[in-house]
Image (cartoon, rainbow, N blue to C red; front, side, top):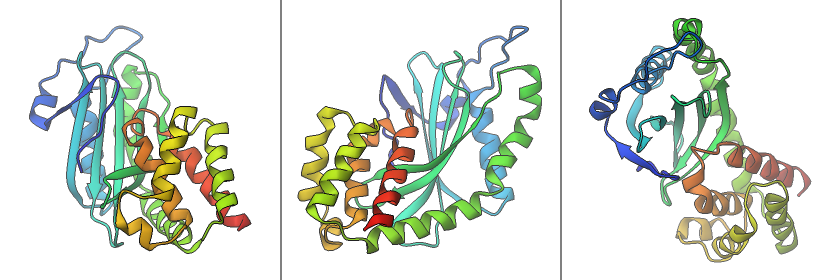
Amino acid sequence: MTLMLHCGAEPIDYPALRNIQTPEPTPSHVPIPHHRLVDMVRHTLGFYGHEVISESHGVTLDGMRYFGVMMLKSPYGGYEDAVALRNSHDKKFPIGIGFGGHVFCCDNMSLMADHVIRRKHTANAKRDLPGLIAEVVEPLADARDLQQQSFSRYRATLLSPERADHAILDRFRTGVINVNRIPEVVHEWETPSFEEFEDTGFSAWRLFNAVTFVLNGRILGEPQSTQGLHRIIDGVCVHV
């Protein structure tokens, strides 16, 4: 997967990531190097039996904010499991680890959950970071199973035109998409860019991928966008 970035971030390889200078600590702020977060997550995933098959990294031009994706070997067809990372040196956001899925055909991604380690960058947080990451990664196997159940339910749920229109407007009302994105989602829903979604008929899976396709550049920086999308699609499936 190619990491899709926004807001001035640029792709970077892992060796270059290690060369980024971490700001000097202060008594109240002890930044975590971006590459150290990557190393610990990669190691912890392996410890709990998850196989990383590829990874991509990106940073803002000043090196202060980091976004990354690790793709995991998945037993399910049609998509890969993905672990998204984010870190900042400028206190913009805390360390974040999110789990979701990457759909092969259109290279889009969604996050089922964004598990944020809400700790200030202090000396204690730096010391405790390996344990904190383990607390996030350890239940990942259950999250993978829940994601597969959700995706199977989306594929099996067909939507009427009225139900689809209502769901798209719900995405606008809840802030998943802005008003300018509505025509893009409608177009992708009615005439998908990829044949795979035409073959599923007018399903919740087709609508889910129409939205994630349009949102793709925002997902790592704003993971709550697809968390909200999952809640809406789940609600649609319950009431159909």
